[in-house]
Image (spheres, one colour):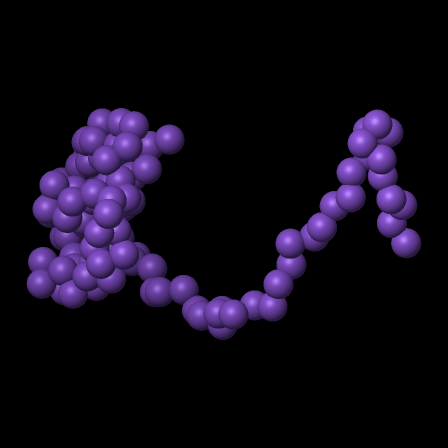
Length: 109
């Protein structure tokens, strides 16, 4: 049984934040074997230096996969904004429209 603490003894009661699992675990999406000839979307939350990180990732991957087509983060808007929920919900359809095979989400923190 936990001991009651007083404000002066330096000990605190702790509650373990475990709750019933609400979502079922789903299998991961199939991973790409290669980026060769693929279309990759860039997502960014418009915080910190994600634009710099996206550019660096693109430059580095372009060395190995020169035929990758990039869809800029500018195409989607901030993934951390007032309309965040709607934007994220729209991504599967937008990816389908744009022929996106993979996405990179830059948070740059």
